[in-house]
Length: 66
Image 1 (cartoon, rainbow, N blue to C red):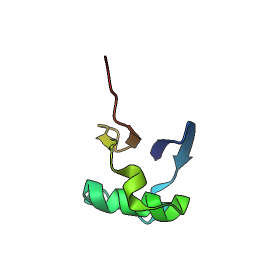
Image 2 (tube, rainbow, N blue to C red):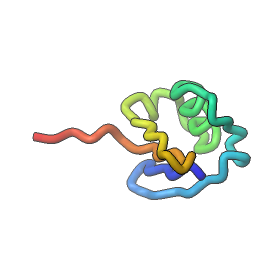
Image 3 (spheres, helix red, strand yellow):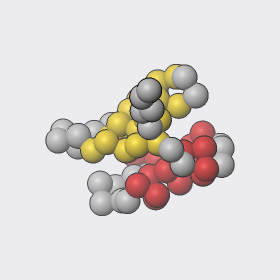
């Protein structure tokens, strides 16, 4: 499962919907997400991809503190 926080909303998307594989790098995953949401790739420039031990991915904006 891919858990995505994008534009203030949360989405749970199956890897198969995005045509993702576990071996893909961050850029490839962000490209698939940009296609899925029909936005430019640079919309995900400051996003973090957290790979969980369960195999799930969490895609979220970079946290800024201070």
